[in-house]
Structures are given as C-alpha cells and as structure tokens.
Image (cartoon, rainbow, N blue to C red; front, side, top):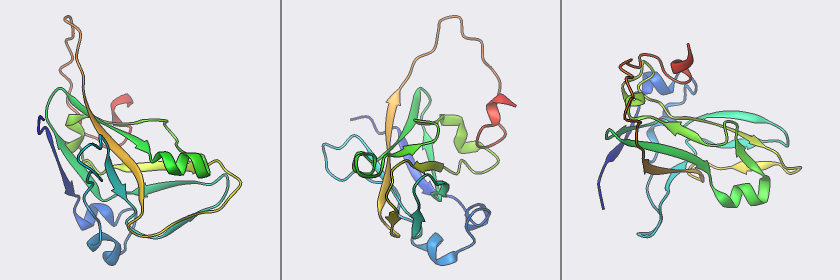
Amino acid sequence: MNKIARFEKVSFEQFSQMCNDRVAYDSIELPKRATKGSAGYDFHMPFELTINPGETYKIPTGIRSEIADGWVLQIFPRSSLGFKYKLQLDNTVGIIDSDYYHADNEGHIIIKVTNNSDRVLELKQGDRFAQGIFIPYGITVDDESNEERTGGFGSTNK
C-alpha cells in the first residue's frame, strides 16, 4: 500500500473560530480505519450535537490532511447514518485537494451535513459520522494550471 497522506489537528486558534471549546479540541481524534480492509478513515465528532429533522450544521473536525500530489481525499457520510437518518453532506461529496493543507485556514476540514429524516439525530463526542477515502487522480495532457491556493473552504472560485 502507498502511504500518501497524514492527518493532523489544526491549531486551537483555527478550531476556536467555529468552536471555542478547549475540551472538545483536546479530545479530537485523528481519523483512522476501523479494520485493515476498510477504505475509509472515520472522522469523529469533536463535541455532542443534536441535529433536528431538516437542520443543517457545519461540523469543524479540527483535522487537516497533508496529501501527496496526484491524490485527493473524498469525504462521505457514514453509510449507517445515511440509512437511518438520511444524513447527507450538503455538497454530496467533499473534495479535499492536496494544496488545501496550505490554505489560510490551515486546511481545516469542515463537514456540512443535513438531517433529511423525520427523526432527531443525536451525535455524541467521539461518534464516527463521516469517512474519508484517498483516491488518485490524473490531469489532461494539455493542463496548464499554475495558480496557487491561498484561501480556505470554497476559495478556488473567487
């Protein structure tokens, strides 16, 4: 297996812009695979959260990922939460590019979800709620992109 990435915590200063809770920050778990056959790295809740039916919430994971060139981290909801609560990512699939690590927001991975069910979703601190899968990608032979990212989330279309 290629080892192409590394997870780290963002600084408390960055995390506190969305969640000024030192206990939550200190308890952040780096994503890990549940089994040796798992493709996905589980993201854990940094704090308790109740999401009512129809509600949307941005979850600051406190995590960033240094990713080798030619790879992307894709974020998906955990399938069990999708089945039980119709939990969906608001952008359907999160795309974490390798240059996002160097963004102004330290590459902080923020996962925006919506509870599309008719049931209240209770997430406890430490619960697994999303998963990330590293996937290689290619570029076209005539690609001439030489722009560099400076901003964080959603910055490449500004």
